[in-house]
Each structure stands twice: as C-alpha cells, then as structure tokens.
Length: 215
Ligand code: B1M
Image (cartoon, rainbow, N blue to C red; front, side):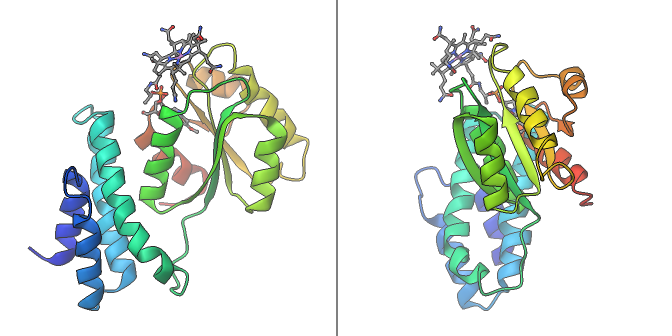
C-alpha cells in the first residue's frame, strides 16, 4: 500500500497499543520526500474525515473518534515544525469554548479534534468561558469563528450573551459564530442569531466550512 494511504488507514484504525505507528509512517514519508501538504491532506486529514463521516452515520462512536484523533495528533506533531516553513495555510482559526457556568467539555473537545483534523487552527478557550474571554481570544488570535458548546439548559443563555457581546464589539462583521451541545437546537440558534448550529462534531466541521465559504 502506498505510504500516504497507510497513514490514512492508520488514522482510521487508530493507534491503540501502537502509540507511534502513524508518527513513524509520517517520518518515513518525509524521508521519502513526500510533500508535507500531501501527508497532511491525503493522509492525516483524509483519515480523520472518514472517521467524521462514520461518526455522523453512527457507524463509529466517541471512543473510535478519540483513538483516531490521537493517531492523527501523533502525525501532526511530526509535521508541526515543518508546517511553519511551508506555505500550507490553515483553513481558518476557530476559538472554541464551553460557555460560562458550564464545565462539560467532552463534546467540545471532540468538535475541536474534528476541526483540527479538517485543517483548522483551533484555540481552546476551555470551560466556563465568559463572553469577554471569547472576544479577547478571538481578537488575540485573529479568529474567523467563535464556537460555543453548552450542555445545560441553564447555561445556554450564555451563548446568547456571547453573541450579543460580539455584535456590540469590533468583531461584529468579522467573526462568525457556531453553537452546539446536547440541549441546543437549530431553532435556538435562529432565535439567538447564531451563525450556525451543528448536532455533532463532524457536522460542526461542515457547518464551519459553510460559514467561511469553503467548499
Ligand atoms: Co452533567 N449533565 N452535570 N456532567 N452530564 C448532563 C448534560 C445531563 C443531561 C445529565 C442528566 O441529568 N440526564 C444534565 C443536564 C440537564 C439539563 O440541563 N438539561 C447534567 C447536569 C444536571 C449536571 C450537573 C448540574 C449535575 C450536578 O452537579 N447536579 C453538573 C453541572 C456542572 C457544570 O457544568 N456546572 C454536571 C456535571 C457533570 C460532570 C462533571 C460529572 C461530567 C462532565 C465531565 C466533562 O465534560 N469533563 C458530566 C457528564 C459527563 C454528563 C453526561 C453524562 C454526558 C455529557 C457528555 O459528555 N456527552 C450528560 C448526560 C448525557 O448526555 N447522557 C450530562 C458526550 C458528548 C460527546 O456529547 O457534549 O452532547 P455532547 O457533544 C456532542 C454534540 O452535542 C455536539 O458534538 C458532540 C459530539 O458529537 N456538540 C457540538 C457539542 N458541542 C458542540 C459545539 C458545536 C457543535 C456541536 O459548535 C461549536
């Protein structure tokens, strides 16, 4: 099998128990002068997007996604120093956090992994994130998108508060917003004026691309 295809398969299968397999394959590909962009796009990102599609269709579940993400990260860690010197631009920058008062982060982390896997630069704002912090991080990192997660009906209004704060700031025309989390719906997103809603981590990638006009 071609090396890049092996990297893709390595991400899909995950590196459970063979911690460094994908990293080794990436090193081998670099030795063989496979371009960094090819390794990233046709190997690591392609593998993660297969997992994303399977996750959307309930063919795989959270553990498989976590294992694939770990394999992908071991590969991107090898590429990271080279990416800075290459002309590969991230698809965009997303600041992602769980809204104020809410400490749930499993779903948020999955969304982040999928976005990273798709080629976005993702800034982790963490949990219990106040509107001002979302805005500060978005400014600092010149973000294109602010992503908010909420798992409690009582913290969902934090999304509204953050969107209002964004609309009242200099980011109003610059930053798109996307929201999600178990109690969140498209109706709620429409009600509070969010740019987009996604029901799961893989759809969050599709929606983020759509918001930024990326095919
Ligand atoms: Co809490 N909790 N919890 N909890 N917890 C829920 C959410 C709850 C439904 C349980 C229940 O009562 N049946 C309930 C909420 C009820 C409600 O408001 N409707 C609840 C409660 C009440 C609480 C506490 C208040 C309990 C207490 O202390 N009395 C407390 C609140 C603490 C706080 O946040 N202030 C609390 C605490 C906790 C733990 C700390 C113990 C733990 C969190 C650990 C952690 O996250 N590090 C926890 C957990 C684990 C859960 C359950 C069991 C699982 C949540 C989860 O991780 N799901 C949950 C019950 C349940 O859902 N079965 C529950 C898996 C995750 C992959 O799914 O986060 O939905 P999810 O993410 C999905 C999508 O929603 C989407 O993509 C993800 C992947 O597909 N998505 C996005 C998520 N964010 C997105 C953002 C996007 C797009 C898509 O764009 C930006």
